[in-house]
Image (cartoon, rainbow, N blue to C red; front, top):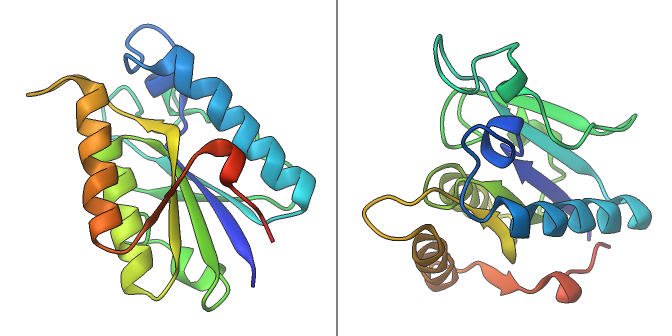
Length: 169
């Protein structure tokens, strides 16, 4: 069975100054390692990029909108405007039927959660990688928000794995 890596909104506005997520220094190397593992295994990689509107930190075409990890030849880039990366994009048609999906990226309680749920509704087994997703402080500290999302998604049927447990077929 094919395993696809979905990197959700791994963009400069989330991981680099002026306002990175609080865990940027910890999550960025995990994301880079995960991507290298997928590439080494020859797994399909899809970079999902949020297209923000005027004056958003990820406004299309701005520095903040750019992907942190440059896609290689053969890796796909899907642009989105909704938290669910399947909504209004060609993503569903790009994933092989029944493919397992490894999800990592930004922000845990918005785009990561919405895309994981949408993938599961479409019959894709989902693995969320601990330490490979993050968010901003809000009503609670960012780390706690990310942990809560992990619990929710596991309760809904996703798997949770540490980086060294992730295998790409």
